[in-house]
Every structure is written in C-alpha cells, then in structure tokens.
Image 1 (spheres, rainbow, N blue to C red):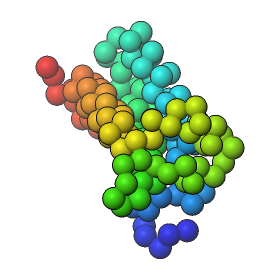
Image 2 (image 1 turned 90 degrees about the vertical axis):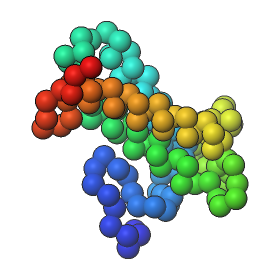
Image 3 (image 1 turned 120 degrees about the horizontal axis):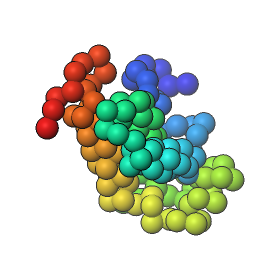
Length: 131
C-alpha cells in the first residue's frame, strides 16, 4: 500500500497507479456502470436522478484511475500495464480506448453527467440549483 493517504470515497487511490487493479479492470467497471446508469437516466424522471449519483461518481472515479497508468511523455497506457486476463482481453479488444485523448474525454463526460445530476437534483445535502 502506498504511504499516501487516499482521497475520500468514491476515489480508489492516490496519485500513483494501482498495483492491484489494472487499467482494463477499471475500464470494465467504468463502462459497465456508465452504460447501465445512462439507460436509467434516460428512463427516469429528473426528480429521481439523484438516486443514481453515487453510481455515476463511482464510474467517474474508475475513469480517473486509468490515465494514472500512462507513463510521463507517453500518449497511451502501455500494453505492459495490463496484468490481469480480463484487462489484457479488454486492451486487445479496444486498445484505442486507452489513449490519453479518449480517456480524458471519458472523464469529462462522466463529470458532465455528474454535474447535470447535481444541477437537476441538487448536490448531496443541498437543494437543486435549478436551470
């Protein structure tokens, strides 16, 4: 374990890449949750979107972990970072999804969805900010 104190949940860890979970596994979690929650957001009234906030925050945290595996001066997660069978399979299937630009876009989109939920439903413990 890193000596750095990890940020509060739903974040997964500090500033360094995980040595336990590989980037493909983080991607599996992030995309699976995003797809499921996205469908739910489309099929529920805005007044209920706050119920999905924690899931979106969890997906965002998983998306934010993946770029930590990109070495300084590089533009993509190297194949060597994928240490699990599931992670290697995901990388072989879609290596472009581990390029810096794509990863940054995924983080921006997840943050935008979270901000939209907060705008409509209110931040945790607060009232909706309105439109």
